[in-house]
Image 1 (cartoon, rainbow, N blue to C red):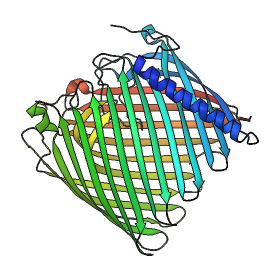
Image 2 (image 1 turned 45 degrees about the vertical axis):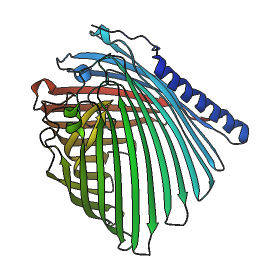
Image 3 (image 1 turned 90 degrees about the horizontal axis):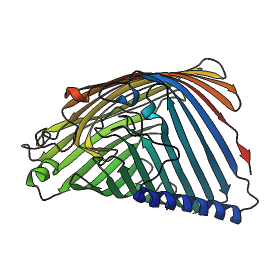
Image 4 (image 1 turned 60 degrees about the horizontal axis):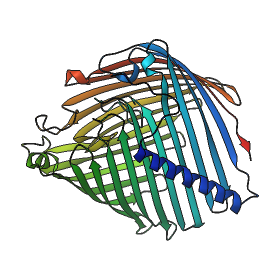
Length: 452
């Protein structure tokens, strides 16, 4: 069934409530800011984008459809500052028009959010933030651009994330913080896995002496799924850091994680119930203002039922390595990682997953107003839940490749032009989950900040 969205979108009741709460809170904070500090100027930045492009697989669907398209977006960012307070507000929307695929014409995405920071003293900091994002048929990319999952469902996806954080620095190097996060995800399609995610985390960092630093943290999460069984997770870690001069430090970290499914089905529980114990050690150094590097490695052991969980009673390597060199006109960053964890994507629970990632990013400043960026990345995801008992679409080993080339020209103080080419390839063990896309974009961006 084809669905045609019109601008502006009609939000669902649950999302409407969150949307109104975010809007009211942002408006209230803005008004309070203006009333409390009328003498302080705000910086308001309206912006607009116009994107012309072509893709040989629009929205990365299983059956590719190619087309030319035009997307127009408008938005505004606001920044208010006065002693002890910082308020950032942002909102925007994008409308899309396709040459042949008329069923995709209409609302493409929208966002609304704020970030409020209150510091009554140098020792205390309170942060309240809320971000609402609505996307129509979001492609199979994570929020950071990684190709990690596929979606069987179509239609708009609405997500609201609320965050509250308290940070207390009780000395120059010692601190304790508490973080609460709620993320509500709702899909337009009835088969979409709607979720309500809650996390509470506490971290403590204490400088034992001028050479040693201790960090301890605990976190608990609960995810309520509309279709899948709900899950509860807990994590605790301790980290000891050796300060080896002003530019080098070494660390060792021990962590314990537990995952539990809350269902009445024994098979599901056994496939989702497990514990992991991990140890990692590493070292990092800022060799010079131009060169910095870090390397960490470790091991993670999984305890569970190996009949339903392929990772149970096995060990997996951990790796976190990166190097950055900043030349006179260019920067080069390389990174590699290996980890084991429970990953969610747009509400879909992918189960216990072994992930490997490696990539390079190169930036070259051609002139003062022009720059070139090249990015290449390889990702391997190995989903450990037994395919027979898997309750989501992620199965087996998936190799993903991503390449991006972008040339940017600051035509004028308020105008920027970018030409971008991207390539995505997802080679899955399950052939139906394969994806490939070539895309070319020409993006014109303009903004005009002014004081108010």
